[in-house]
Length: 88
Image (cartoon, rainbow, N blue to C red; front, side, top):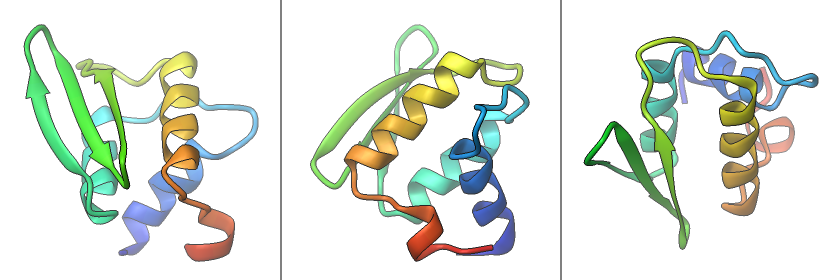
């Protein structure tokens, strides 16, 4: 995982949740973990990772805090621990 992906990952897991994360930068992070990324209709991004599946809204602007929290929970349920496995 390169430094840019680690930076996005740690921004997702930062407290309090930030709202200035570009959704285009999150997709490669999912793919870096081996997730299957596909597009559903109506601007939805479907991700399958480690037996977990979730659909996120693909926006053109920065992610909202609620979306960041949903991504954080999805990654946590998928077994991702950035502080342990991917330190900056």
